[in-house]
Image: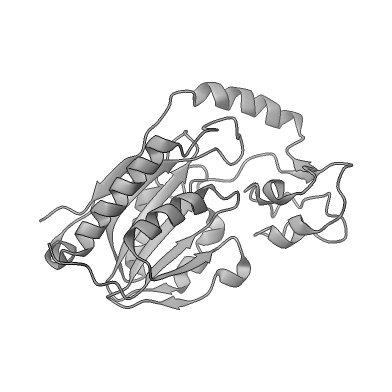
Length: 267
């Protein structure tokens, strides 16, 4: 097998609480040393990127209600490939990845990419952190390493990239706007010190400097970035409905799921 020559590996993800970043960074470093990283959590990093045929894209997304975050639908239109190979990853909190992979494949192919492999990996749930609390674990990282090495082999096979076909699970008639979000949102309590870190990190601009304890529920996507960054643990889900949903979700998602991977197959 000839060695893959990668000009640049673009590591693009949305990671509010750091778990998708963990998975993306681990995989990308196993594939190439020439890396450019963009975290779409930051508005400033949702920039236009033009990629060459010799480049590679690793596109990693958390799963929100079975889809990628709706806030990422616009910046994906700024990615432009020239039949550029792309690897997709869905990172989810032990419920299911549903239509996330087929959605990513569809969106990227419309932007000029050839999706060569797809993986689903487990991480602590972003809203209910008691679910998949120890993920990714050692077994997950072993699965990610095998995934990365297999992707390297595919990247070294030009014929397979040109003629292979990738099939991923999901509903081909998916509705990207089907998930309407959850009915609870994080807010600050009396321990808030007004440091404004939550204001600066919020990807939806749902928290303002006027009163950082409050959250605009119409804008909030419940990603949890503000919870993770708060230095005094002032922000969390305080609504009674959250505790009710948490109890039911823990029971529903107690079955432990494992990583799944999908690769190009020869026609």
